[in-house]
Length: 231
Image (cartoon, rainbow, N blue to C red):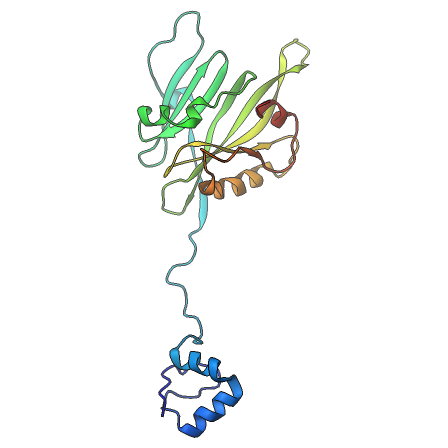
């Protein structure tokens, strides 16, 4: 007799050893391969997963000047700045401005943030950031990506004051483990669901290889993407 100790098997009413006649009956019903798997336990009703997929959530921090520590002192002719602001856990945000262009990077210190590709990701047009950073992370875990709104000056679209109007986009940046770099841009004007597109891109950012992959436009491309993408 063969013992099947899984009462939850289809067609097995109890866990008593099967007789030779029952073995033949089940072999005709399921086939010998399926029966062998049945006896081996591979056809058991799947047990509940030990842990469900963690819920992905957003938290927010500010890079406003009042929340930052200013590093150094800019020269009188330079309106630039270097700001360091706290992020979740042990992370800090490095926000640097020079020649009316900003970069934003993340690390466990200023030194580590400065070494990341994101710290060298200057855009061609004049640029600035909204001071709110959205951090994407599993509930109770460290963040794996950030989303931030950027404003790019469009010299081909002057306003009534003859200053260039700005075009907005959401920038997705992957976080450690691995390098910190831009992974996706979302054109705000071209995509009514820009926030959701950015979150979807952020939730996939860990798979982005900063050394090999190229930043992509998520959703529809618009003027902001044209200004941001390398030519």
